[in-house]
Image (cartoon, rainbow, N blue to C red; front, side):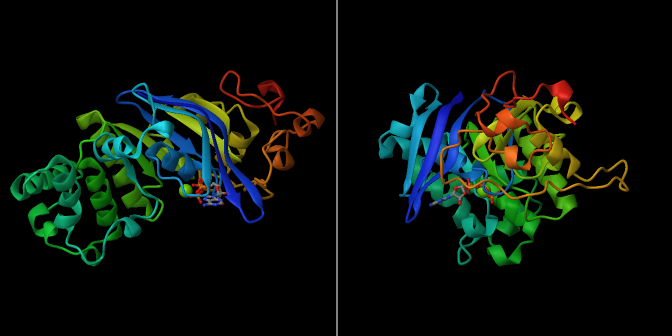
Length: 315
Ligand SMILES: Nc1ncnc2c1ncn2[C@@H]1O[C@H](COP(=O)(O)OP(=O)(O)OP(=O)(O)O)[C@@H](O)[C@H]1O
Ligand SMILES: [Mg+2]
């Protein structure tokens, strides 16, 4: 359904180019769930914005973003608007900024479908109640009259997901949907996304910096670093036999529920400068397993991993 092919995103800035996303390819099929994981600055949000045609003015995108066979990067704006309103929805990283503080919940939910599908007030309200039910919002009728500040953080996030569902999209891009929430509410929202996917058949791309939330959620994971895919694998094997030193490092930094005494080890060093297109492994400067060639050549993604060292040699 969605096929991203060698996507490259650069930003023109006062002091040169920023290479935010470098040759990323992946696919999401109907009803599938994919997670994209990476540290802050690894290019996750920009990839989602590129799919939605919402990149900043100073951005240049190359490659192809095929949606049901059409390249979204070259689609006329009117067509892109239609796809945004009806087929692909995004849950933005910051839920507060996607809600208008002065507007009742009802209006925030119904505005889009009234505009794009020409639904009347009553039909739009019925749809709103339906999606509020889908995202398990209790006392939906009363909540329709509420303003955002009257709702808890978890409830905000549900409303923002409900907004994305209003147009019955085929694909939802959920950008850090649980980051601002405490752990119990995080689990509820992940559960909710799973149920939405199961009940409505919507495909979901989950974007997160937290490998911990991915485990029970999706079939496949992409691990990004410096705007490049380091590893791409089915979820279980990725957790059981991570094949890239960066993935291993990330997993050592996730708290172990079974053994809380287990030491957490942060990856030393800081993210790469993105001033130049990578010509060698972007993770090499922080990698415990790096060898001379890692600092000289750019590893291609083969067999689901972009690493020059054989898996057996990793520490
Ligand atoms: N308009 C812009 N101009 C210049 N650089 C930008 C612009 N927007 C984003 N970037 C850069 O692109 C890179 C990727 O940003 P992106 O927002 O995709 O990161 P992210 O993985 O979503 O991080 P986070 O976890 O913090 O949300 C960053 O280095 C960022 O500074
Ligand atoms: Mg982001």
